[in-house]
Length: 366
Image 1 (spheres, rainbow, N blue to C red):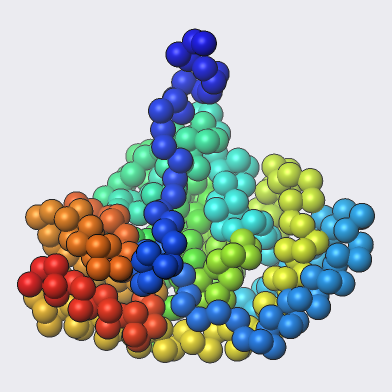
Image 2: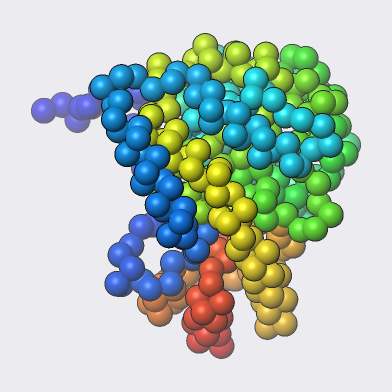
């Protein structure tokens, strides 16, 4: 058999698939590596999901609502809590996780001869979306405190003229939120030739007084704000991401979406989740407080910890971060080896999980 089998695209040959380590809980009891919400749905929410899925199953012989109108209406109502006006269902789009949302954005607005731009360190999937859509990928750089120098960022956008700018806020892996003026500067620099995507996967965890980019939707027609039910909504296994944008942007994404891409089961479960939003989001304040305690504790121990508006903390700096990561794993604590060299990222878990993390870290580095 030829060494070139299978006949994969040449630029993909030898590349390892994306993914954080997944290890059994009986081997690693404290898993703080993929920014999950450690608190699952309540019995009441589970009962609603089960009943809703059962109802959806009665018509599984039929295709689901291709436009998922009920879900878009519910998500628009939920997002409207973060704006002074109203977000309408026509401004909302959803897909199987924010990963698929982002891929659809790149399919619609990227492509051969087009450029996608972000500022490193940033989410490691972004260049993969660009690669998969044959979009040129370009990364500018953040400052030492992971903020953006707005003059430099504007100059880069004006020089490179990207069609897609990807701005996670809070940023992954650093946890850094962008101020509204940064979003405005980049939306104006991109203009009508492209879109600016503010990825708010961790938006519900932002600190008090930190605004959402949703507030700027009415001011910038080229702005897209994405969210997910994987994090604050405790729905990582659900796989439901969504965006808010000008209706024309949603219409453009319809062109590239696969037919009936959201199953009836996904729609039913997601709708039940939105109905229980107050309950599912009830642990957000507790997780934010635990995050802030973790940042303070790390700094008290002499580590560097980045300010975070997410449900994780980037900390360091280590001469051999892999050795620290492995030492934690050997003690039953799994975190993430990601971000700039010398840094590690820990998701915020329960109070007991964070105590276990602290104990293991002191043993490894003490």
